[in-house]
Image 1 (cartoon, rainbow, N blue to C red):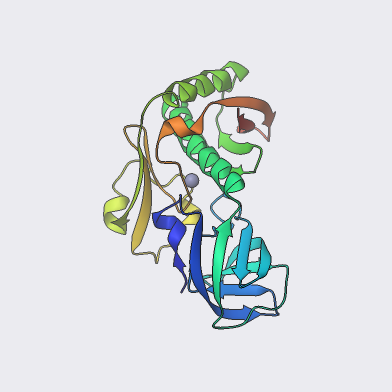
Image 2: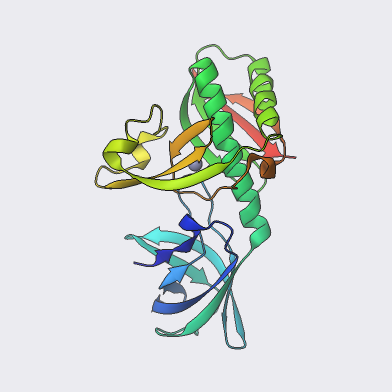
Amino acid sequence: MAKALYLEDSYLKECDSTIVSVKDGKYVVLDQTIFYPKGGGQPWDTGKIIKEKEVINVVYVGKFSGEISHEVDWAGLKDGDRVHCTLNWDRRYRLMRSHTAAHVFASLLCTGTGALVTGNQLEEDKIRFDFSLEKFEPEILEEYIGKANELFRKDILVKWYELPREEALKIPGVIKMAEAFPPDIPRLRIVEVVGVDKQADGGTHVRNLREVGQIKALKTENKGKNNRRVYFTLV
Ligand SMILES: [Zn+2]
C-alpha cells in the first residue's frame, strides 16, 4: 500500500515517487504520495505529476480498495516510472485551515450546547456543518463563531499521532462521526487541538490555530425537526 506522506507531514508540498500501477491509462498508484484522497469530509488534493519533460495534471484523488488512486489527464505513465509530485498548495492549505477550523467550531458548539454532529463537508470556499440541536437561535451560531475566532488568535498547537484503538476510545468525544471508523482498525489517528479538542481523524491540519485566521458565518438552514445546517468560511 502506498505510503501516505500527508498523514505525518501535512506541509509536504512535493515528493519523488515510483509508479506502482496504472489502470486504464489514467488511474495511477504511487509507492508514496503527498496527495490527500477524498474522504472524511475533506476534498481531494490536486497538483502535478512530472515525468522528465512531461507535466501531468492530477485532477482527482480517491481511495479504492484501500489504495490511493490518482486520476491524471494524460495517458502515458507506466509501471516503474520515477516521477516528481507537486501539490496545488493554495487549495490544500485552505483545506487544512478549514479542517482545523471545523474541529474547533464543532468542539466548542458540542461542548457548549450538547449538539451532536451529524455531518460535515469541507469545500474549497466554505465549510458545511450539520448538527442536531433542539433549540437553535441564530445568535448561537454567532456566539460560537466568536468563541472560535478568539481561539484562532492564540498560539495553540495542533498535534497528530496514533493511539491503540482501546486507548483512543477512552477519550471522551473522540469519535464524533462513529460510522467513519470501521471496527477492524487497530490504531486510530488522533488530531489534538491542545486544550480544546481530541478527535479520531485522517485529515490534514495546520500546526497552530493562528494559521486558521478568522471565520465568519454564511448561512443557516433547518433540515428537519432538530437538524441544522450551517455554512461558514475563512476570511
Ligand atoms: Zn476532521
